Image 1 (cartoon, rainbow, N blue to C red):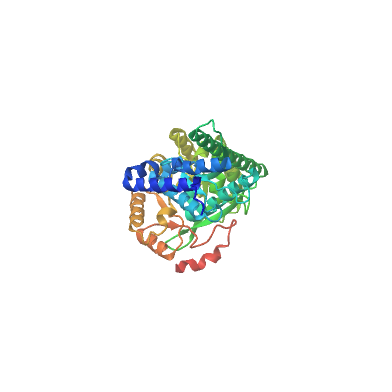
Image 2 (image 1 turned 90 degrees about the vertical axis):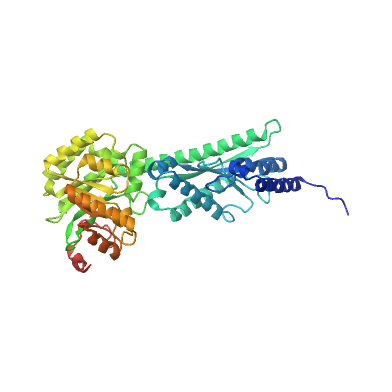
Length: 454
């Protein structure tokens, strides 16, 4: 029998076994080379695999999965939530290994406590190299799979705060360049590719938003607000929607793109125009809650729109309109903000603060604005009948509202248990899917007659 000659694979296996033993003997090594959040190895541990592929094949392809806008997660929710997002991304990558990714592909984190992942792709079975078109196809499949799974695993409000983009590059063997340099340059190219995909995506979204603004492709739905004492309709919140069936249908997506592309005032003006036009048919005795972005409060066209479009062209008096300040963005200039609010209040309009208990600056906004209405965010309402912390927070808001003469509206009521708890705590008004989904203006209120039994 011929004597067995050790090959590169044998040496690699032996090296890995020795390294694994070293990690077991010296736990401090793991802390330096494995990310404590995801448990994944970091890039240096990929070097043996990359070296082997370069020596055997002459090249190796890598992917970079980049979590973008992650600083927003830390800014709003804190680093613990960001860590949880990174764990979810790592678990998602593990879940698609064996399907979208091959079992032999190697996954790592770019650096400890970072926001990027690396995949060393296994070479194709029937050729030496991965062709450019095939590599881009892998990129698209991985990106699509990650987004789909994260969309199912992560709370929608959190998922919308960040994005995942995948880039790729091929590292080519060069005996005159150190392995570390080759890997560093290859990863930089893959990250740059993911950045280019993000930039292209953003430009396409901006183009589509401009088309929506140009074509005025915005519609208005309304969501009734009920008095919990007798389930009569207090009024309606006007809700803007983009093109039906598109990714721009939901207002949170619309306004996020608008803020990213500096088009928020144009979008706000169009939404306001559509809502005020619909308001002409507002039933007698009902109030209209009109969403206003913080940036738009200081828009010079707001005063004209409220005085001409509403007062001059509609039968609705300003005393029936509540300007609902959303908290999708932070209020940066409270002096100008208060000046505009004083003006609209002088005309007879009332002011509400949306998303109390969430957002960028609810407490400061409350102190500065002195609203007549306060809407309790659905994150507090959801499960308030079974969660003592949520129940106590709402109870505190009820006591606060009574002391400063503010009316409370609970948003996002979905169960009878939540409704019963809100009544027990003394909340006066509510809206939510328990009663109805948003509808076209304005519904026949006779359909709500049975609600008196709730």
